[in-house]
Length: 66
View 1 (cartoon, rainbow, N blue to C red):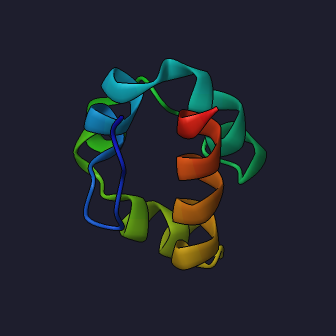
View 2 (view 1 turned 120 degrees about the vertical axis):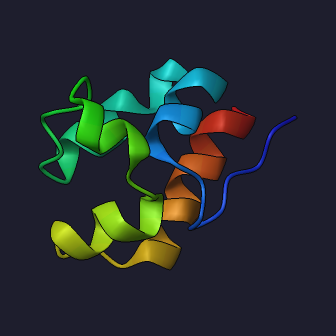
């Protein structure tokens, strides 16, 4: 089972589990298909959207692990 970190890129994250998209959308990341967002790390996305990166990683890993 995959685990993501703050260094995981959004593109990789969506390949691991596309069902995490609602979590990203809930923090205001509405441009998931944009080329720039695909190369952004979870930590960078969290910073841009004013979210704690550790909490975001925790929520994403919980979703991925089911």
